[in-house]
Structure formats: structure tokens, C-alpha cells
Image 1 (cartoon, rainbow, N blue to C red):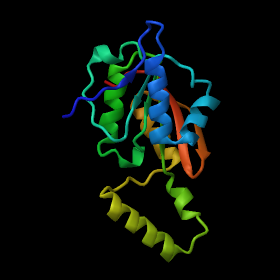
Image 2 (cartoon, rainbow, N blue to C red; image 1 turned 120 degrees about the horizontal axis):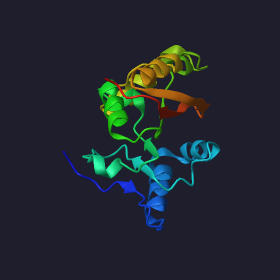
Image 3 (cartoon, rainbow, N blue to C red; image 1 turned 45 degrees about the horizontal axis):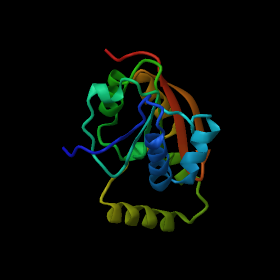
Image 4 (cartoon, rainbow, N blue to C red; image 1 turned 90 degrees about the vertical axis):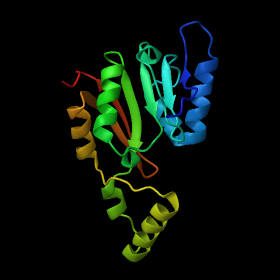
Length: 174
């Protein structure tokens, strides 16, 4: 597994890690993701980790012991073992830490105004070119998944065709 430089801001008063996290968020997650974070009042959080969607991570518990906000830039639909991923984060992060991410809602795709055959072609082409497959999800399923993992969904908001969520650790899975 590849070890990467993650964007953790230490409590040393320096904000270079913070700015690096915000840059990563905007470059990979887009301005909409940043606007969502800003709307939550968390854009200035110093103890923030932004997990890039382009890298794999090997994180030690010490790396995450002071984290207040963890942002995952990989769309939940594309995470293979999502239950295990969320359970691991909940076990490692401090109590009351927030996990923020996003997913595609299957209802949004179904209610799209494009003719079905064009939408189906686009979706298949996108999967072919991406070399990835995605889980079909909706708000209710994601809320249940978060709860099973020991998280409480504090906010879910549709923005530019995606659902962004803010969750907080409320209890540890057994």
C-alpha cells in the first residue's frame, strides 16, 4: 500500500497544512464541495484531514488522534467495502469527530430529463472509461449505513446533482 502525505494541520499555529487541505479539496472535490463545507461553518477548521480520491492511505492512529473533521473526496458509490471503511474511520477517529463526504443519489439519475436510452448509454460509457463500478445509493440507504457504522447524519444536501453529507461519530461499533 502506498503511503502518502496527508493534509493534517497540527496545533502548532501554522496554517500551511490547512491551506494545503483546502487546495486539495477544491482541486479534487470542486468548488461545490468547498461551498458545502463553508455553509457548514467548517471551512476554517484547523484540525482537518482531506483524503484524496486519487491516493491510497496508510494512516496510524497517532495521525488522526486530534482530527476534528475528516473529508473523504472519494465518492461513496465508488468505495468497494464501504461498511468496513466507515467502521475503521469511526474506530480510529476521536469521539465527536465529523466525517464529510458525498455520493450520487440513484433517484436523481432516475428522475433526470434525458431520454432513458441516452442516459443508459452515458452511464455505461462513463463506467467503461472510468474502469470503476458504483453502488446504487439513496439518502435513506446512506443514512442507515452511517447509523450502522456509529455515525449520525447531521446534514444531507443536494448540490449540483450530488448529495453532500456531514456526519458525526456518536458511538463506536462493536
